[in-house]
Amino acid sequence: MSFSISVDISGAVASLSDLQKRQLPYATSRAINAVATSSRETLIALMPSLFRFRTGTQWLRRGGPTHRGWFDIKFSTKTNLVAIVQTTFDYLWLQEFGGEKRGRGPHIAVPMGKLRLKKIPPQLKPKFILAAGSSGGGALGGVLRAASLTGARSRKKQFQQFGVGFILKSNGKEFIARRVQSASQAAGIAISRPKRGTIDLMYLLVNAVHLHERMRMVPTIRNVVQREWAAAFARELEGALRTAR
Image (cartoon, rainbow, N blue to C red; front, side, top):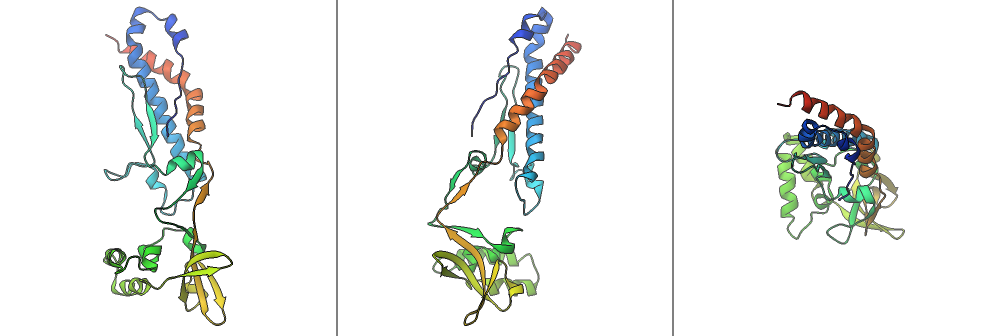
C-alpha cells in the first residue's frame, strides 16, 4: 500500500537566520523520523484492539532476522526528506482497504468453533486432516516435524489425526469434518448425528472471504503527523542549533 502525507514548513523557513537554514535539513530529517517512529508505535498499540492474535502480540514487533513485525520504517536523511512507514506483509493491504481474499486453490478453509480462538497446531490444519496429495508426503512431513518437539504420547495423538478428515456437504455448504467419540473431543463445532455418531465440523469451505477495512493505518498516521509534527520540528531545530558549530 502506498500513500503520502506532507507537511509545509515554508512559513517557518522564511523567518530563519542563515545559521538556522544551514541546520534545517538535519533538523527536518530528525523531526520526520521522530514522527514516523511515533506513528509505528501508535499502530502497534492499536492493533490488539482491532485483531485477535492467537499467538500473542509479540509478532507485531521485530522478531529477529526472519521476522520484521507488521510495520517497518525507511528513515529519512538530510538529503532525502522522506520517511516511509510500511506494512511488511502483502495480506495487510486487504485489512486496510478491504476486498476479497481468495486462496491458492478453489477454496478457503475458514476455521470454526474453538479453532478460531487459538493457534492451530499442524496436525489440525486442513492439509493434514485431509492428507493432501496422493501420497500425503508433504503433510506427513509436517506432522513429523511437529511430533519431534513433543513426547511419545503426543506423537501418537498427532499421527492419529493424519488423513482422518473428509468433505461433508450439508445445506448447500461444504465443510472439512472428522468423526470423534464425544463432543468434548471436537476442535471445531460438534454435531451429533444418530447414525453417524459425533461429527466435528472443523472448517467451512468458501470460494472467497470478504474483508472489511479495519486496520486504519492511513488515518492513524495522518493523525499522528497532525498532532506531533509542529512540536517535533521545533524540538529538533532547537537541538540542531544548540549543537551547531
